[in-house]
Length: 85
Image (cartoon, rainbow, N blue to C red):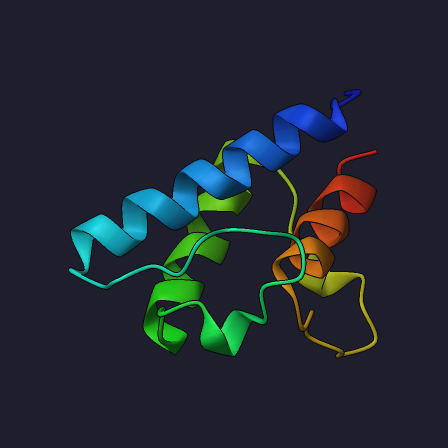
């Protein structure tokens, strides 16, 4: 299954916005250089996003990594884009 990087990006951003709304969190402006810990989301929110992205994209990129969690939103998106190829 070939996945378009822009489609992955849109999916990730949509999930960040949806989870922030559901969890009543104030989300920082989403940009590639946004540090995830400064996003306004806590670890529960990020766990929800990861679970939903696995369902939406059919990949769990964290099974293929060496344990390094992405630092920025851009890193996070790229991790999913690479795993979806």
